[in-house]
Image 1: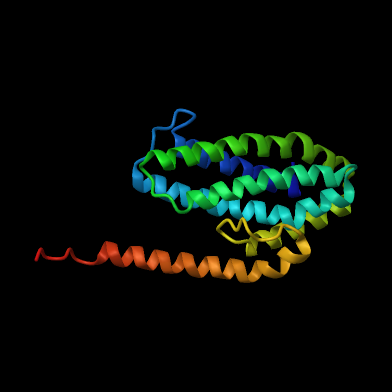
Image 2: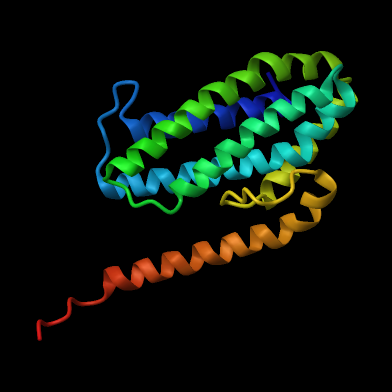
Length: 198
C-alpha cells in the first residue's frame, strides 16, 4: 500500500497506538499522570490534524469520485463532529481522574466506529474510483495539507473545503503559537524555585 491509503493507515495506526497507551490496552501498563497528559496532547494533535486534512482532501475526493459520495461524506462528517467535540474536551481535562478516563474511553468508542467506517466502507470505494493520476494528486495534496494542519480540534469551524481552506493557515498558526506559549509557561513553572512559606 502506497500513497494516500498508506498515509491514512499510518495515522490510523498511530491513533490506536496512542489510545492503547492511554488506556493501558494491548498489555500496556496504565501510564502515570504526566505520561497521560503527554499522550493525550499527542492524540489531540494527531487526530485533529488528521480529521482537518480529511475534510480538505479526502472528503471532496469521495464526493467527486465515488458513487453515493455525498451520503458517504455526510455520515463520516457526522462521526467526525462528535469526535472533534470529544477531543476538544480531552484537551481541557486534567489527567488522573474519572472524567479524563471517561473522555478517553468515549474517544476510543468514537474511533472504533469512525475509523472502521473509513477503512471498510470509504477507502475501498475511493480506491476503486481513483485513477493513477487521481491517486498521485491526492497523495501530494494530503502531504501539503498535513504540514499546515492545526494541532487542536476546532469543532465549530465549517467542514466545507471552500470555507475551511482559507481558515487553515490562521488556525494552524494560532495553534502553534498557543502550544509554544504553553510549553514556555510549563518550563518556567518547572524551573522556578519553590516559594518560601509566609
